[in-house]
Image (cartoon, rainbow, N blue to C red):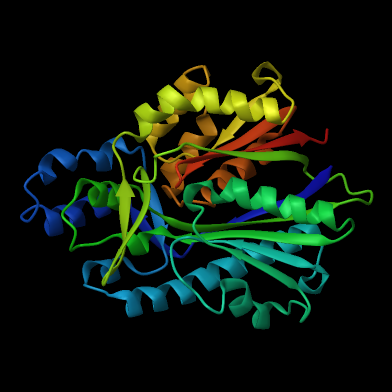
Length: 349
């Protein structure tokens, strides 16, 4: 078994109250998008009270192309990486020089050199640290990335693997796109990072044991979720069919993955899910036959931070650990592909 030694999270300093975001969105979209008044209800129905962004709110009200968005991403995402990683290392009682491998997951910007390289000088990682930057997992990246970190730890017993998921989703908010998906993104997206340290072997009990990870990819679903790319930057692809698709197909896919991981759903004490939005949370509860409202920590994280893509499920896990994680848990997230990522996690007490 691989021990999860610590989970830590970080958000930028710029706070975005949802009511203020809704007011500004009305000013910018109201007279230009015929369906805005109907779509504006999403700012209230999203269940979000506030979010955080790597740039001040005024920045998003001006036009920006790839160079400006990329510069904002590299600076803001690197700062979030450092904040989350430093907290995770401190909580684990480790120094940066103790880390043997770094797995970095991010899908909201392009950085070459990659984010962990940009953070390395100020954090004093070893010169021979192994780096695994991963792009394109989207909202599933928190689960898939942690699963990858555990596999790498398992392959090198005694080594310390640092996993960091960092996203700047707000950079995809576009004033030039008059679309339903863009309005929904404006109402949902926030920025944040989460970091974990994992280790296989030794006497470390950790916070929990990471057991098995698996993924399920549905055929012919490339258009459900992802990015479009144009001269201005990334544009969000959100198909309105995501919640009903989850209701119809998530249950069977989860049953398939649990069978691969050699457990039955009746043996799962808690599903720990990525809260993509209120309708998605409702759909997950229906698909997995969970009591209505049981994904309470998911709704609380969504209200406090919005949808931050990959790190969000780890914000939920952090809260569950603080409340007292027990039994067998399954981390789950839906992402581009269209993909379900799952990971089993057992409490150590």
